[in-house]
Amino acid sequence: MRSRINILKDIVSFSGILKNLEKELSFYEWDSEVELIEIHKIDLLNGIEKYFKDEINKQDLIMWFNLIECRDDIKFNSDVIQEVIHELANPEINGGISRDRLEIIVKQLRNGACGV
Image 1 (cartoon, rainbow, N blue to C red):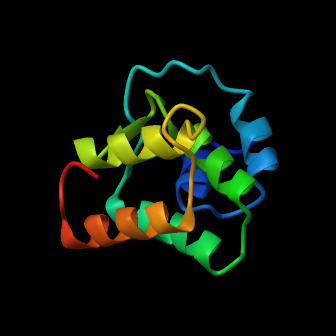
Image 2: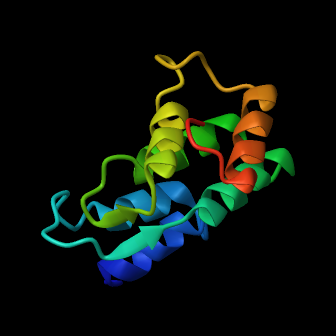
């Protein structure tokens, strides 16, 4: 069995099949006393870029954000990152996900803007 850290690294870097990573991670408890890895703006930008390049579909993108959201074992580098993850993990309550909205988010992440 792979380590929790390695699984989390693969999830954050979107390396591998999400369903398989989710299944691997399910062998570990949800709660964690410590943050094992950190997610950065570049990780979000890379994930969204996969969608723009048609390497993944919208459901994969949503699933990825859901796998990351509210985890005790992942440190969110900023409030902006946490806001973006929450918005894109929950499109049904946040107005959906459109290419236009993702482009705005990418631009704001690249410019370091808050209040994405």
